[in-house]
Structure formats: C-alpha cells, structure tokens
Length: 269
Image 1 (tube, rainbow, N blue to C red):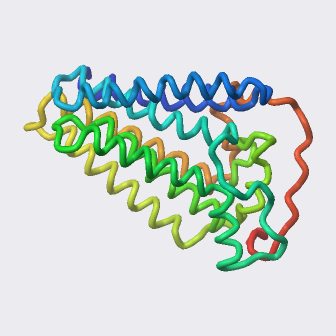
Image 2 (image 1 turned 90 degrees about the horizontal axis):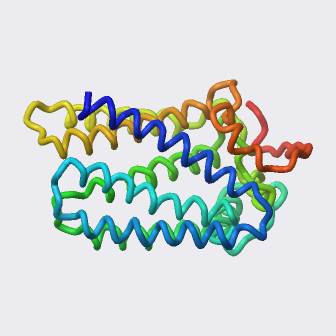
C-alpha cells in the first residue's frame, strides 16, 4: 500500500487540486497575474533546485520529492500560458475560412512562445539531471509535455468536447483554432500510446525486483499518465469537462459566452 496505493492517491489529489488552483488564479482580475507569475516563478526555481539536488538520491523520499519538483516546473508552464504572459506573437482569432498550412501557421503563431518555453525548460531539466539515477522529476515533466501536446493536437484536429470553459477571457481567440468533430485519426493513436506507456510504467512499478524508489516513482508516473488518458476520454464523452473543477472556475465572472461561428473545418460531423 505504501509503495503503490499512497503514490496513486497522492498523484490523483495533486492533479485535481493543482489544476483547480491554476484555473482559479487565472480567473482572477488581470492585475493579479504579476503576483501569480511571481509565485509560480519562485516555485519553478525551487523545483529546478530540488531536481538538481535530488538527482543522485535514490531514496524513497527522493522519488516523492522529485515528482513534486517536476509538477512545480510544469505548473509554471501552465500558469505562464493561461495568464497570457507566454503564448505567441499572434493574439487574434484564426482567419475566417483558413485551411491546411494557413490554418496551421496561424495556430502555431498563437502558441509559439509557449512551445519554445517548454523546449527550453525541458532542456534545462534534462541537463540538471543528466546521467543521474533519480530522474523521476524529469520524466514527470516530459510526461506532462507529451500528454499536453497530444491534447493540443487533438483539439486542433477535432474532438467532440472542446472544454472551451477552461480558457480565460483573454485567451478566447484560441477557440477559433479548435475543431469540433466526433473523432480524428490521431485520437486512437494517442489513446493506444497512453495505454501502452501506463502499462509499461505499471509493470515496472510492480516488478518484484524494483527498488522502493523505483516502485514509488513508477507508480507516480503511471498514475499521472492514466490521468492524462482520462483527460483524453473527456474529449470524446458527452459530459462537461469542467465537472471536476467547477470550484476552480468560480473566480471567473459569469457571462454568456458567444457561440463560435461554424466553419467548414470545425463543423460537427
């Protein structure tokens, strides 16, 4: 229980609470964002310092703390994006009727600085833990990255549930890059890849020869990937995606959201 049950429950709680907290902070008045970013940047510095300090520690506590440090680093990415501090050079909606390469370039321009920030931070984390035995935090950050990239691409290609309610008002233009479809060709690939990763991590965690550090670390990672799969399932289910985080969305002023105009690439099918 201590090596598997507790890490799984901890990951579930941290995923749920941290997501809700970020949504709550990003729903506050924009003049609060500088303080939110200051706090997130302080936690990022702590996370990076912790990853480096724990890199050669293979104790059980180092697995827990390394995971938390990886989450703190990814939290900065989410906060920087949702506050609008780090998004992209394009701050307007997708051109009407845009298709193919034109639409892709516009979508990439809307999140370019965000993607480059992830690349830079991932490179720094890998460098800080290069060759070290404890890379639970590194794999945590990379798992978040893989799951979020998959989610972005599926939203771009088209899914049933777009979860637009998670976007704050200052990022509403990003809705124009989403497509509403029942399914896209990437979605089954994303699910199969996620299930495979989750299964492999679970087998590693349950391996009789695994050390306590490995058992805890791989359980944390397996649970995180499973929750990423759950987020993907929400994309194709006819249920509101915000059902788990309505408390986090409570900071946003109630307002009727205008319907997004249907387009040929984003129309329901």
